[in-house]
Image 1 (cartoon, rainbow, N blue to C red):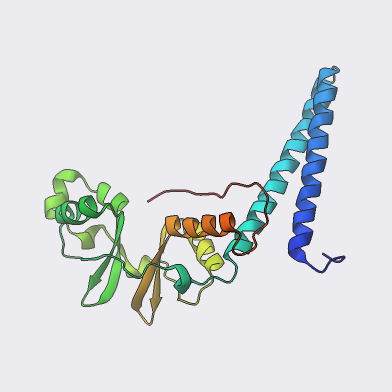
Image 2: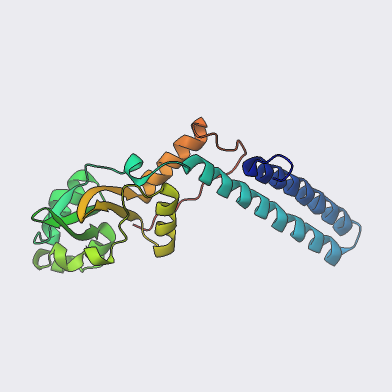
Length: 215
């Protein structure tokens, strides 16, 4: 970084150097293991494996930051979010909305105001025999427990909110009005597209982007 004045170039160089050292340690450990130094060889190989994972993780984090840098919540949010009434029964929600559209989450609104969010996971938590006399408002996550973000929030911060609170959907709101929705799957698709096309000059190293699905 001090030599080139470029933190991205410095991080890539450090990661590549770390991978070279890691492979050398793994190779040396295997040689010692074959020559009879079982504990010493295994220990060197383990250190090399740990260093290799650390280097790959460093490149992965840098790739993600580079690919998403400059994007804001309003740039990728879905504006056509399906909404349902809180007084809708869970049976009607399942048969009229979930099964017909394949969507896994719905916003709950009343008189144009966002009240909460209901997901397939929350519906499944209610015994099926009670769906007919249970309502969306009883199963949803209330608005005061949703981790909403402003439209100008950077995507890296949105990703941090998802990870910190272990959520898969983040509403984008302004002055209490819903503007759109960002889901983890959508965010990951944007990330994959940027990494694959190099539109944001992500480091061209072989890494796999992380993904989870807890909806």
